[in-house]
Length: 116
Image (cartoon, rainbow, N blue to C red):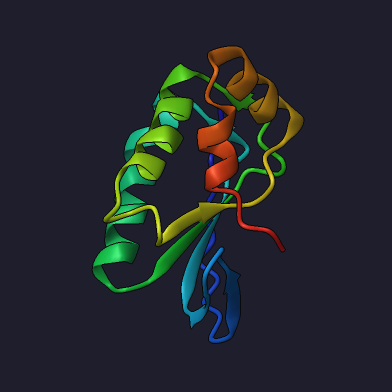
């Protein structure tokens, strides 16, 4: 259960959305786990970044442990119109994808996936 985050500020991140491509700064957070123990700290990182006008990219590609609280957090991000255009994630690891399938939330997780 280890979460590490690193701030990566990039001036020219091409954010490929369905209808637009935006250039913005972002905070990238690499997640090895996404459990209830990680959520409070992650929410604070997201909140601080968004308050500074910085988008957030969650790197889920190497996430090896996820629980229902972690999945609920991702679904909540996608369900909040004030947040979902500014918080995205990389292609989820197999562990995250399998948990999403088991919980029936694949479409929510796929909606937040930012293609490289």
